[in-house]
Length: 225
Ligand SMILES: Cc1cc2nc3c(=O)[nH]c(=O)nc-3n(C[C@H](O)[C@H](O)[C@H](O)COP(=O)(O)OP(=O)(O)OC[C@H]3O[C@@H](n4cnc5c(N)ncnc54)[C@H](O)[C@@H]3O)c2cc1C
Image (tube, rainbow, N blue to C red; front, side):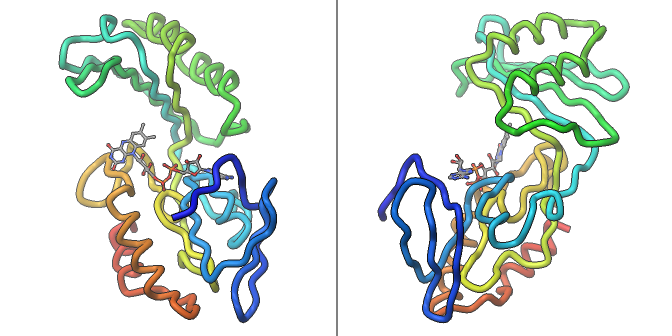
C-alpha cells in the first residue's frame, strides 16, 4: 500500500480504460478505481456526485465534544444537564486519559460556518448555551482550553447509490448518519465496522470496472433508512 500524505484530490477524469486523478500538489496519476473514504465532508463525493448541500440533510441539531482534564470529571460516571433544546454532559472512562464533555443543541436551520473554523464553532456553542445553569459555564471555559475539540451538525448523507462509474464511497462519506441518531438497531453506532467490508466489496465489484449497486450496498442502505 502506498500512502500520499498532505495532498488532496482536485479532479477526477474517467474514461473507458481507467480514471485520471489530479492532485493538489503531486503529479496526476491514473487508477482503475477511486474510493472516497474522506469523511462526512467528502471531497471525492463532491467531485464525483455533486455539492454537499444537495447530498446531505441537516436534521436539526449540533454536537460538540471536547477533552478536559480528568480531574475535572466524575470518576467513571457521567453527569448531565438537560433543558429544552440543549443538553450538556461530561464523563470519564478507564480507557480515556482525559474527561469528555458533550454539548448538544437544537436548531431549526443549519448555521453558516466552515467546518474547519474552530473559533466560530466554539462561538456557536457559547451562544447556544448562554445563560445555562448547572456546571455549563465551567464546561464552556474548559472548551476554550480543550486539547481536542469536535463540532459538527447532526447530518445525514442521503444518496441513491454509493458508486458511479469507477468511483465508490465508503464510511462516513457514503453513509454518515449522526452521532445522536445512529444506525437502526442501536444509538451511536458509527460506520467503522462497515468500512472494510464495503471497500472489499467495492474492489471485487469493480475489477475491470462496474458502477452497479451491490447486494451488500442495497442491504446496508436498508439498514440506514
Ligand atoms: C464524537 C464521535 C464519537 C464517535 N464514536 C463512535 C463509536 O463509539 N463507535 C463507532 O463505530 N463510531 C464512532 N464515531 C464515528 C466514527 O468516528 C466514524 O464513523 C468514522 O471515523 C468514519 O470513518 P471514515 O474513515 O469514513 O471517515 P473519517 O474518520 O472522517 O476519516 C476521513 C479522513 O479523510 C481525510 N480527509 C478529509 N477531507 C480530505 C481531503 N479533501 N483531502 C484529503 N484527505 C481528506 C480526513 O483528514 C480523515 O483522515 C464517532 C464519531 C464522533 C464524531
